[in-house]
Amino acid sequence: MRTSLHLSPSVRLLGARQSLLQLVTHLDPQRWRPVVALPFSRGGLADALDQAGVAHETVRMGQWRKVKFWPRIPFDLRRLRRIARAEGVDLIHVNEPHSAPYGLRVARALGIPCIGHVRLDNVDQRLIRNYGLAQLDAVVAVSHAVADQLRGLPSVHVIPNGVDGEALRQVAPPRDRARARLGLGADDLVIGQVGLITPRKRCHVAIEAFELIAEQFPSARLLLVGDPGPSDAGYRDEIERRITQRDLGRHVRLLPFQEDIAAVYAALDVNLLISGTEGFGRVIIEAAALGIPTIGTRVGGIPEVIREGETGLLIPPDDPTALAEALVALLSNAGGRRRMGEVAQRWADAENGIDRHTERMMALFDQVLATQRAVN
Image 1: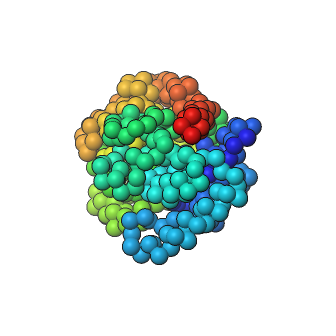
Image 2: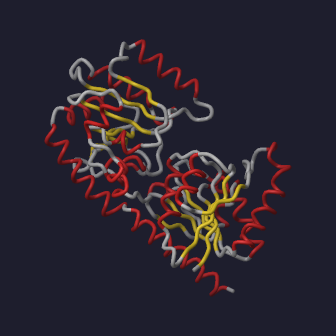
Image 3: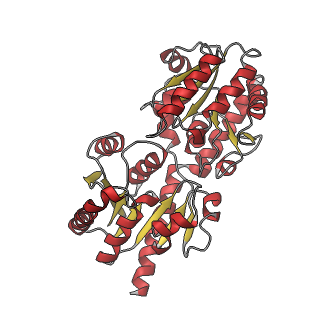
């Protein structure tokens, strides 16, 4: 059995950290023992790791490029080296690019490989240069769209995120109970978008589209589920103003981040992911695991996880009219919507199940170690 050290720059249990949690809790214990380094000992990811019995250590790992964190960097690197030596770490996995400089320096000091994940489709040469991505022994791109932005790097592997669909189905309440918890009616037509309340997710486009369909579908309800990003409180305020100005308070609700996200998906008829940029679209697979189709934008990795007309619908970004038309198509056809959700569930389980994802990641771990041994 080998030991992997996974570096995460945050404990907020959003998409990237959800994916890390799924990975480390599904590694084959006969092959790999995970240890996770986090900036805080408490918080969403840390608490979930405790619950799952996965070892984790606290290392601040402040943003590499910010001057205010520079005095701490030598101490954090020293602590990471001590953890890696004490745990007998064989490989370091950097869950997001911002931790790559830490992982690379510790790996080189100990003579072990370091691989990194790139999960967003905002990669440019500056990011690659500033965070040393070209020095990684392997880079995991969550979609071909992300991989295209990493062209020229020596070892890029496309491994889509994995979701434990069966676990989501086991904890999801029945539809009527899920709706009752959220104050929704049994006959409401419920659309949801789960994720940060941030301009990148284009919540304002959903508001504009809902203004177009609210009159046609009086029972339509839109749930925007999530918290604003660190600098996005003003954007959330703007969304609230738009809801009020358009007299959509009866139709649109903002809900905070939900620990029990399966209960939200269980209440939906349609899922949305209408981002302006998106590396993969984990929420598409989570919703599909519960038989919910998604309307997504043709950006980044989203078209790779929505089969047009079979598991969901694709629309141009920043187009509220197109979104309204797609919503009308699904809301007015309950049978078609249900069949689309059934196909989405089967496809998600087959293509993006957590066992397949974890096996591919472990195979990459083994490959990188074998390559290093051959070179040495």
